[in-house]
Image (tube, rainbow, N blue to C red):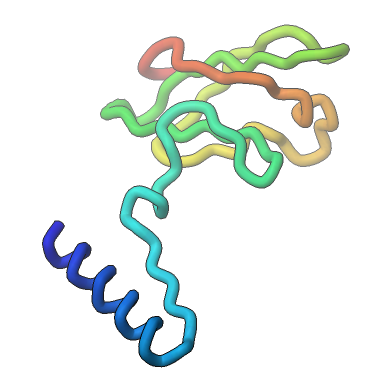
Length: 100
C-alpha cells in the first residue's frame, strides 16, 4: 500500500512540474465489481467466488419481463448475447447456486 501511495504522490509531482498529464488507475478501479453491473450500457455479471461455474438468474423488464437461468464461469460475462435484442432490457442478475 505504501508503494502505491508513493507512486501516486510521485505521479502527481511529475504532473505538477512538467505540465503533462499522467493518469494512474488505482487497483480497485481496474477491477469490476462482483455480481451484476452495467458498463457502457451493457449488462454484465462478474463471478468472483470460489466455484468454477455458477448458475445465475437474469431478470428482464418492460415487454421482455421475465427471468432465465444462465451458467457463467469466473470473471466477467457479458449478459447481452449477440443478435438477441431482448437482452438490451436486462435489469438485474443474481447468484442462485454453485455449478450448472
